[in-house]
Length: 531
Image 1 (cartoon, rainbow, N blue to C red):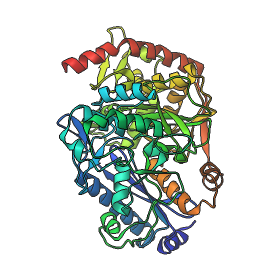
Image 2: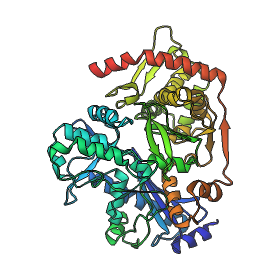
Image 3: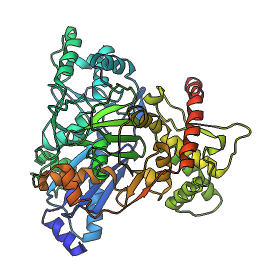
Image 4: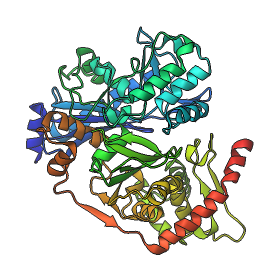
């Protein structure tokens, strides 16, 4: 579409907005009737470690949402000379998991506990044993049960527990609902019903019965909805919360709020069985849509669902590019100190491509990118750590390569359980997120890590905000088609991408590096104890 056509669609209320709360960035994406992005907005934010808990305040959430939407409006005004009054649909997504607990007066009982926390080990272990189903530390039910085990005063007053996406959606629409993909990060989902597993719900209620709480599951959880189902409309209050300019009208339909795993699947067209994707940014996760249940229970593997409710195996890593980005920042400071002006994107490109010149096993270097704990490698806390021996090949190429390897090492350890031990079949892995913005580099490293072809589409950098915008569009334009069919026909029919097949030498080098990485984990554990 040309600019005039886009302007008219915006003024006619035909455009769709998707907003996703990422770990460090809130992003809004405006799409037209052809489902392609036409404008965007963003807001930078960061979680804080307060009293041992990674959190964002409610003020952070609303300041960020409003700032992001205002930035989108500025982009629309600059590009098309118009303002947004109406929209065809809106979608809200956010980091999955975590714990937002409210009382019957809708007051937050304790600070938001995000997915990044590793403070629920006891609860996760006991629930995994009770359900015979892996309950990761990040999940809402693990946070809830840990609060029970801790004897926390607020638990008796719980009236509603939500994820971040479900909370924001509730405030905008008044509806306590959740997309089933995000809901599957709160509590296990039954594939038969598409709702919280009734048998496990009963086991949990029996487990806490002697506590005498006035609530029970699933009454305090949001209702699960599949992609395309009615999730309510923007209220007058919600319109004012989102758009402080006051131009946005109420009555706009919202799709079920989803988690970043689900929007990543949608943005990479990975919602059908035997498809998979890796999202690599501040955190990292790899997902494969399963053909059948896994044979074993793995603490390292989450079982979640697509936005349509199909079973997905996911290896989730708390850390990915934060340490890598910090090192690039050091090189940026060096350039500035030397009086050399450099574009940050070019700096990333130069350093990433330099990594391809490195030794396949990184020349004996070792790196752990742990800003926070990593349950897969059994680390409750993290300390970024770089190590080498006197005879290591300490070159810039190897230095950058080892940081790229480190960004994907925990993911590889988890995905190897699926691909090697369980024999899960996947036809292709799609890559998206910040790690893949430099063409070919992160993609080839991931292909080596998983020994699987990896495809990055031209839309790979769009990410979850585009994914939730597509889910919002699907909610009002599905024409009764299943989500995977609609995506194939309406979004990705002419999509262009590039596939990189694994180089056997790279695969061998990554395997050799991972052996060193796993042997060196006691070094990281010692750093946690002593730093």
